[in-house]
Image (cartoon, rainbow, N blue to C red; front, side):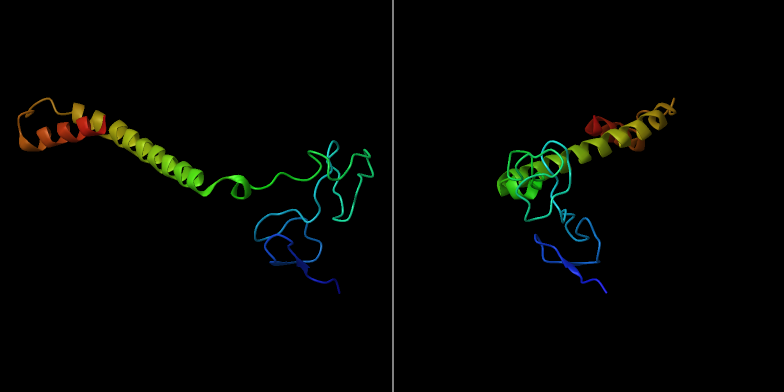
Length: 123
């Protein structure tokens, strides 16, 4: 029976034969430099292209969490939330504007004035 693989990054236990961690998606064998061949952790050179295992591009690129400063990650997530809010506002306007145009009379009623104010706020 094969032993359970432990992820070198997060220490999560993975099934035998897994190529990537089921918890953090880290590869168990990093890819080689120019050719992309999977290298065992102890390899110094790639058996396909002979590039050094520690040469630039020989190992997989680190995850964004590893190299993005926390304050930038927070700004990115805040911007993403703001953009999503804008998209929802645009969708609401696309739905409400045609409905508002159906009203040919009663533009001076409270309901229609409130609907117009809502549409103007969504613009």
